Image 1 (cartoon, rainbow, N blue to C red):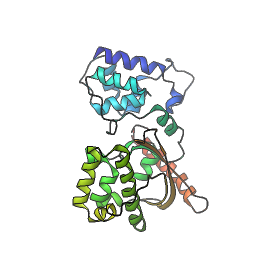
Image 2: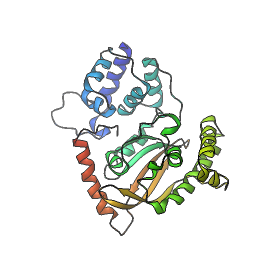
Image 3: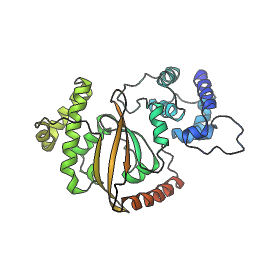
Image 4: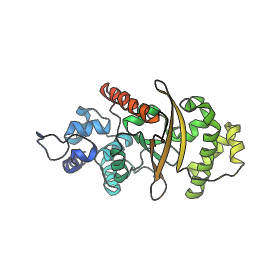
Length: 283
């Protein structure tokens, strides 16, 4: 693990605080990030991160390697090398440990005043900012197929709790049409065919919608979301797709008119309160 620690240290030294949304400050003793800052960005304890840089401690998990790669803004080649040094296989492109391009992370950091997240094409959240957490709740801890919001939408009634009941039918149609587009782009790979097969067997609603053969990538939509403290927020949801379509940057904005802008401002206050109570999620 010595080389793993050395590589972390070399990458940490080159990242400037402002590049990852941290205050620069006038009394910094190092040109790059401090160890404690990397630990917070990666969702790790400072002691554990110190052990990694020192080449000690347990072998990091695939999820931790992915979090470190995001915190340090590694390129895809550098991320793959970090997995090699950790003795871990490079995860599939569509997994929860998939590489998030530094450009998308940079855009995410530049949207501090609006809820935003990077998700996979099956709507599994890879990273989200604090306002997205305040609006949508914490990132799901589910793994595998269950991590995708499309799966949870049709199998877990609680997944719909933050959506206005009048929106459920529309959202179901949009999810299924989007999934058909993803299936076509991926060439019917095992992950998508397995998901479709399971949903066909457990959800009559999904089976009915799938039989309609509607196809459309979801690029923008109007949503009515229910927040436990702020009530209903009507928001525009926009998305930017990666070049290969495997990931999307989502962000929510207030339409002209109505009270959504005021509620987003209140959400900003609520999000700040969550951070002060120890929410150190990546992003």
